Image (cartoon, rainbow, N blue to C red; front, side, top):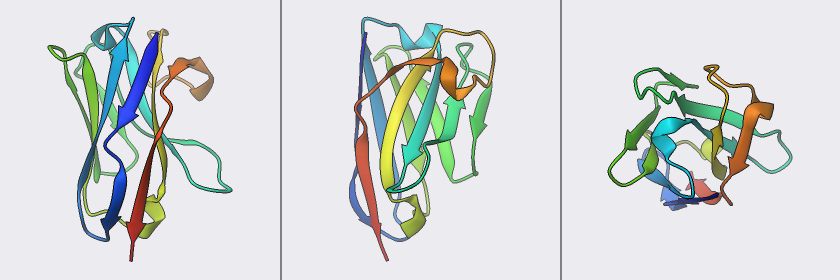
Length: 120
């Protein structure tokens, strides 16, 4: 199983960004998928998650919107009104548990991360 997160970059405060998570070896629609971020010197934190049913979702703030495209086997994270404090490496991960929202330690496959940098 391989996950790949992409779509990060250098943006300005107030911009929007859509990150993509692609998978090989795993059908994302069959698993809970989460997006996390980790800023330098800080713990990794979940910002959004989507349940395998595609209906139930979690987001840290309303600025974060998670969605899924089953035909492309991708999960997306839309971040609106970006702020400097959103600067971090963003990761996608999948969890086999049926629990929603999964605990962080229940996520078993992780992508390599994509850097988001928000300038003020």
